[in-house]
Image (cartoon, rainbow, N blue to C red; front, side):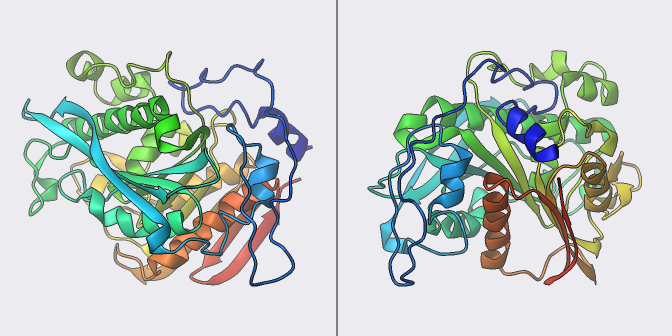
Length: 371
C-alpha cells in the first residue's frame, strides 16, 4: 500500500508549508517514452541515451547514469561560475551570492537531475569551494550540481567565538541562509534550459550548517520562524518571495557532517522528506540526539540525525542513516563514498525500492523495506 501511496503523491512533494502548492495535484505524470537506457551486459560498454525534460522516475532508475559508476572524466565536465543574487548581510551591507556549477559538457541528456549544495561553517565562515569536491564526483556520475555561497555572520559571534551571540541572532542567521537557498533554487529553475537541469528533480545537499539550512527550508515556514523570533518576517522580508511564480520540486535531502533541526516535530506525515544522514554519535558541534545550536549553552535547543530519522521511520519515509560511533564533528568517510551513498539512495528512490537503512560506519545494521 505504501508504494501505491508514494507513486500517487510523488509529484506533490510538500516542502514545509511555504512550498506546499508548487505542483498541483492535477498536473499529469510525465510520459515514459521508453528506450534502452539500461546498463548493457558488456561491462566495458555504457549506453547514455537522451531522456526528455521532466524525467520520469522509471527512466532515471534504468539509465546507466546516477549510480555508482563514473561515466564521465574530468575532461568531460564543464564548470561555470556566477552570481545568483545580491542581499544585505547582518550589518546591512550588500553582498554578492556566488555559485559554481558543474555538469557533463555537450551532454545528450538535456535536463539532468540537479543537486544544490550548501557548505558548512557555523553560519560564520566557510566557502562554496568546500562542496565542489563532492559536486565533481556527482557530475562524473551524470548529475548537474552547484555549490553556492550564502550570507554569513551574526551579531556577537565569530569564527573564534561561535557562542558569543544570542538565540535571536542565531534564528536570523538561519532565516537569511534559507532565503538565500530559495533565491538560488529560483535562479537555477528560471535558467533551467541554460543549465540543462530538471526543475522537478532537485536534491538539496548540506554539510553541517548547510544541513541545518536545507532542513529548515524543507520543514519550516514563516510562522515557524515567527514562533522562534517574533517580527522576523517584517525585519528580514519574506522567506520565499517567488513562492508563487517559479515552481520546482525537491526530491530528497542529502546531508553530512552533522545534522540539525530546531524541533523534529516539524517533520510530519505530509512533509516527511526522503533523507540521507551522515553524523557521529559523539558529535560535539551538532548533537546526534539532543543538544543546542552549535552546542552553545545559551543558544536554542536543536535535535540531530537520530531523532529526525526516528520521525521518518514513524511516517514510513525512506531514509539512510549513516553514523560513526566516534567523538568529534568531522567524519571519516571519503567524499567519493558519501557521494556514492547519495547516488545509491536516489537510485532506490527512483526505482520505488523504498527502504529505511541504518549503517554503523560501513556496516548495515538495519534495512527495512517499506511496503
